Every structure is written in C-alpha cells, then in structure tokens.
Image 1 (cartoon, helix red, strand yellow):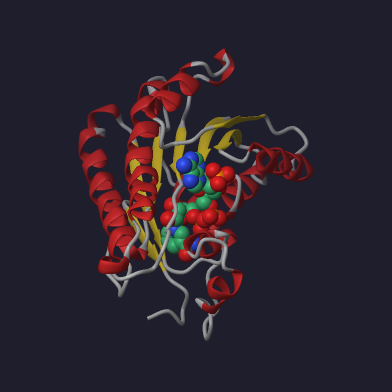
Image 2: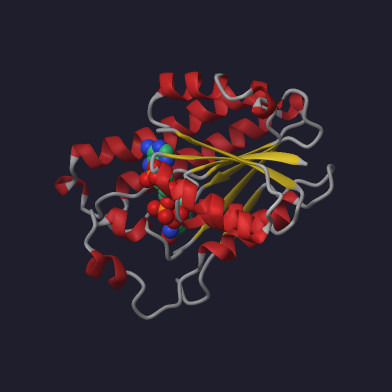
Length: 245
Ligand code: NDP
C-alpha cells in the first residue's frame, strides 16, 4: 500500500483523485482541507467504493506554516510515512485587470497556491525518506504556461508552481523522489464559483460554448502517472478541453 496525502481533498480535483485511486486497492489516504465536514462525506464515498480503505482526515489551512508543521508532525505514528503528495489545494479569486484587482484576492492566491504548496512540500519531504516510490504531483495549470486577459496574479502563481516543479525535480533527484506537474485547462469544479466570490451565474458562464474537463478526467491522469514504473517519470502533462483555445 502506498500512502497518498491529498491537499484540498474536500472538493473538485482533489476529491476526484481520492475516489479514483480508491478503486485500485493500492493506496491509503491522508485527506486534508479546511472543510472537515466535506472530508467526512468523502470518507463515506470512499468506503462505498472500497470498504477496506484506510483513511485519515484532518483539517489543514495550507497558508499557515506553523499549522502545517504542527499538524503534519502530530500525525498518528502509522501515518508518518508518506509515499505520494498531491499538492492540489489552490484557488483563483477575482478576474480583474491588474488596476482593478483586490489586494485580499492577490494575497489569498499567492499564500495558497505558492506559499501553501511550499510549506506542505517542505514538511512532507522528510516523511518520504523510507519510501521506495516517492512522488510529488503538483496541480499547475494552463495558466502556468500562458497569460490570459485579467488572469494576472493567478497566472503568476501558476507560473511559480511551474518553476517550483522544475526546481523540485532537480533538487530531489538525489532522493529519488519523482516530481510531476499536471496542468489542466478548464475543469468544472467549485473553482469557478470561488473565483467569482460565490456568483453562480458568472461561474457558469465561463463554460459557455465548450464542454469543460471534469475532476474525474484529471483523476484518471493522476492514476496513470502514479502507475508508471519506477524508472519512468512523466514530468509535465498539459490537458485541455478539446474546444478550449
Ligand atoms: P475546487 O475549488 O473544487 O477545490 C479547491 C480545493 O482547495 C478545495 O478542496 C479547498 O478546500 C482547497 N483549498 C483552498 N484553499 C485552501 C487552503 N487555504 N488550505 C487548504 N485547502 C485549501 O477547485 P479545483 O478542484 O478545480 O482546483 C484544484 C486545483 O486545480 C487548484 O490548484 C487549481 O488551481 C487547479 N486547477 C483548476 C482548474 C479548473 O479549471 N478548475 C484548471 C487548472 C488548474 P477547503 O475550501 O475545504 O479548504
């Protein structure tokens, strides 16, 4: 059994990854997010798929470095060895021109997408020491490869994730830890609603004229990436809805 830690497991891509990997009977799950009640619901869904799944859920705000350090170091003994980290927690907030942007939105995106990813990675790497199949998967984005109108700060955070993924791959080579970036285009999750501060109509309008990806589409790719033999690493995978330019 490989132990997988998924950040932002309470919805969207993170939740789908847990549900997809649960089908395989090869993984045990550390699931975290801020909304613990959602993690309890996910636990029940996983148990329906695979009643024998081992699952430990916990509350974690990745933006708080002290909370990340304390929570991870206080995990129960049987959960202190981690094979796989899926750095998935992230958000876009506001879709405004730079001159109209809100500082609070910028802070939340930078603190979560960049600093949060760094904090979790820092404290998980020592927990991978005994693993034969250590792997870090970062959720990047097409926004880490290009910049689109009003995407400014979100794009900057995902460009940072792209750079950090490459840097981690170099720095962790000596430890035998694989590092992969998965970079989706539009995926229909709570993401769009969070971006527009809960405005459901505006959130929905983003998908007008195209069929977006689903969390399941990304989860199947994560499962494939994790199933490659030890000597094969998929460095970077860009996956787009067919109709997205
Ligand atoms: P969701 O909004 O559905 O999920 C985001 C997850 O991140 C939630 O589980 C949320 O949990 C968690 N999260 C947010 N802030 C924090 C925090 N401070 N601490 C801990 N967890 C946090 O969106 P997606 O599933 O779509 O997004 C997942 C990842 O995929 C993100 O990194 C996003 O940037 C990336 N992505 C998404 C795309 C899309 O179109 N949807 C496209 C490309 C990339 P909670 O609120 O309970 O803490």
